[in-house]
Length: 265
Image 1 (spheres, rainbow, N blue to C red):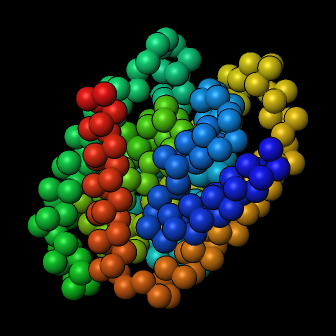
Image 2 (spheres, helix red, strand yellow):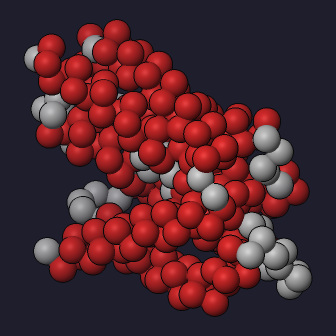
Image 3 (cartoon, helix red, strand yellow):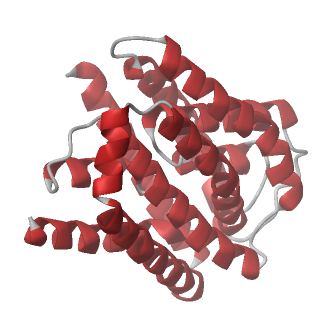
């Protein structure tokens, strides 16, 4: 078990380092890592820990982006009007709906990612050249897009950066790095709400399991924070903005295919 735990600790550090510069929390990899390597069943406690790790990535990377002034507080404030209620609504849905309901949300995410990728095909050249968007912000679209991100964050135990970043670029008219930094700062607020909500609905047995593994969980949180801080600093200093955008689009395509496979299979 020691070897498995060490592999998980190393794995979360690598995930945090890679995902931090591109505005993603890593939730889509934390869950399978803990499930397949540590042998945790996919249930409420695993989702809660995945969200904790995602929250740490958002704080570690988000603070670095804020220090570099790669955020837009006005757009963040508008986005939170959708993201926070969305996160709360997601928890309420989890409590009230029985059965396998994530298919609906994967379909919604698939549609939004498809729209984002289509939009990127038109705006990539302008973004790569560093031009600002002259069109006014689409406030309703920004609130709705962020609301879906907050909703999926609670339901699927993810940071929802794959939703926030395209929403901030398409509707908020932000450039790549600023949309990533702003996405992370939204996650810094929304993910803790989702974590708290998940912990509140855990069974006594699941809470006992978490307490019994508290040292392992704290080690994961610490190494995740370190990985995200170094990853964000490395990305900001060494990876050009156009490369960041290309990496992010590639990740979106991977998520798109993953959702397609989940829906079909």
